[in-house]
Image (cartoon, rainbow, N blue to C red):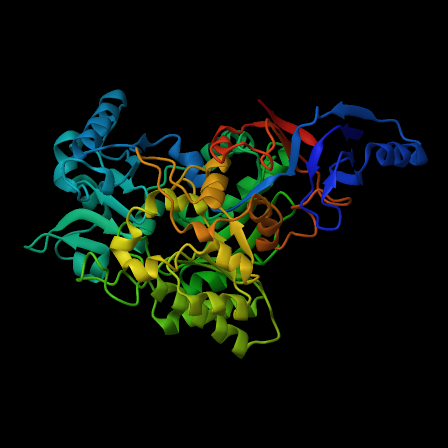
Length: 545
């Protein structure tokens, strides 16, 4: 089938042909991009019958690409207790209690909740604990996770099922919070939380496929045609074979329309070796699903004070956060992936974690210069000028989440001090240095809604709260830079810039129509009111407002 899309305000994000008014789509690719007259000449020369679609002057962009999220977690979270927006431990308890009344539960059925943030609590600004849960949950095992998903709370029934006791807790070190007598209080952190999430997963093949199909249409409504997703940790026992089998079967049945690049969370060298030995490799899959990189968690989150800093937290002198690896172990894991020509995407938020990540990448490049995969760092929040210079020198990608400043601008100076806060979340500096920076949301840590992400990038203002604030206005991105980071840079981050990311002849026909022109708004606030009108993947309409 050949389709002429005409009368569009087309921003191609292709530097060689930045604007167009029409394009031709044949099968799943753009075959002509330019003027309407040129499109008609192209069609006449080829003598092919076609249909025409009038885009009514709307802004047309390449499909947006969320470069780091947790798509399966989001899909699965639609079944969890929503604790987002809770203002107190009391409200957390009320929402959990309501769910406990609604469902037929027993001691083998896990209940999960997510989204609370103790910084917003008005009663006590602390993590909930098992004592807050036990009287309303009884013998039903419960796990409720902080909005950052680096902190979770188990009730006593959950602790028992996981074998976390006074006797076993010491082996987990800082990953388990203890009462003065050595008993666990229910709070678990980082890799231990990841292990628990995997062990209690209620997903099976049928449920996994159902939630993926449902969730993709939520993404299309935001103009997302591609996502890069860290999903293995949400499989039962981290079963990556199950994940890729589900994606393959959904693709073959025609039910997988969104494009998913998997950022494969494999934190153990032996497990990573097994993964590669099973013939999973960089680029494994096709243009609907593929292996994009090995994902590594090297520290925690700023809000939970588990991000690894060089110095003590300014508002808690007892901690510098949590380093998930020694430098030696991190070097070994990165080198393993590097030798397989598979990029790593290292979660690193604190300046110490970022330093360690850069050191491990530099080490791999020196020891094996014959390979040159596109290594990257996810989040890269707390930085100084020297760290940013090293990004450029080592050609390390930055997977950034602009929406994070909506919350973090309120805490960053308290956590790390004003001087370091003034060189952090430095996106304009990154772009100015020529660092490849792509946009993501870390959904469901934040919503994957695209316009708030663009707004925080170009306005550097908060969305929530009674008072409008601005954080480091000199680090604002232009709209052109923001759209580039959401399109071609996302494609570059997954190694797919030659097949998508711009509206260019020969590339996959992924594009969106918006209800207003982002490049000609009367105020920045209009960005938040902008809506996606239509979304196309491979020339096929998958969403309409």
